[in-house]
Length: 355
Image (cartoon, rainbow, N blue to C red; front, side, top):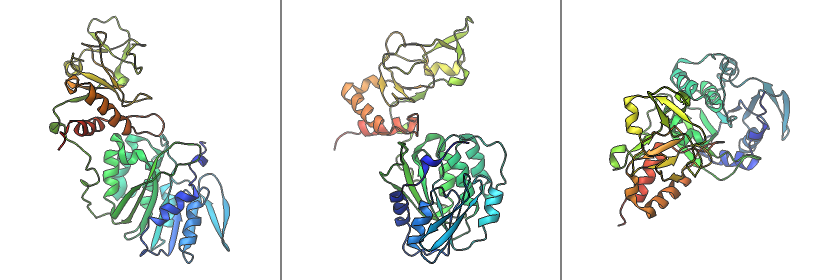
């Protein structure tokens, strides 16, 4: 079993989360289904000394002494929604605190999901993240009017693949607030944000404000095209119908591996032209710009790269500024990446004329 202790909540972050909760809210019950070090429960005990505290964790069964009270920490797998619901759902006027572990996760069984959360669960299955699955467990024990306060990884709020998940998530809350902060976990560079809100599954938030940085393609004169999916690439093939694919992630543009793909007319838009530039999409060079030469022109890139059509027309100064903006938008818990949206937003920042 993977050890999740690296994600134990730093006490200062636990206090910051509690400080983000409105003063008017005084819970009768406080629940943390991934209690771990119990720093969230300890902070809650100081904030609401009269509240009843409940915690569970997958890795241990223990008793936490908080003040003069001993809090039992039950052994429950947070992905076992049926057990989580039977244990905590009936507790009224509660606040659910959450700092789920972060990382790749592929469930070996299909949990029991309440009907109103099935759409969110179906989306989470496509992203395979443990934090998404445990978030659903947290939502499953909330009743209308309960308060939710969570520390969640940056990718939930900014990842391109997470967009549908977060939009559905946001619509479960009113008085929704998302905050950034600079506190990091021990021995990791994971970036997180704080999310708080009052649970009301029938509310419909105006999500445009949350995603106000989105710039539509038609607002830009430059087209951003993603390379060919890496999963369909083949090693060097003798088939005459196959076409060469640019598969590299080094700043020299050296093709360390020869990759091909069966020709398809739809790939013609991905062929690198003379005035195009390439942008590294993933890896340590994510966000950096590469100027293609004769080795690259006339060939499509792999999914490691984005093509920015006709971008040489921006000139060297603007391209340098574009790269700076892209570097600031890099995301990812381990491997860094940028999205097409990041490129479009950065383009908007470097091409808007000064006023």
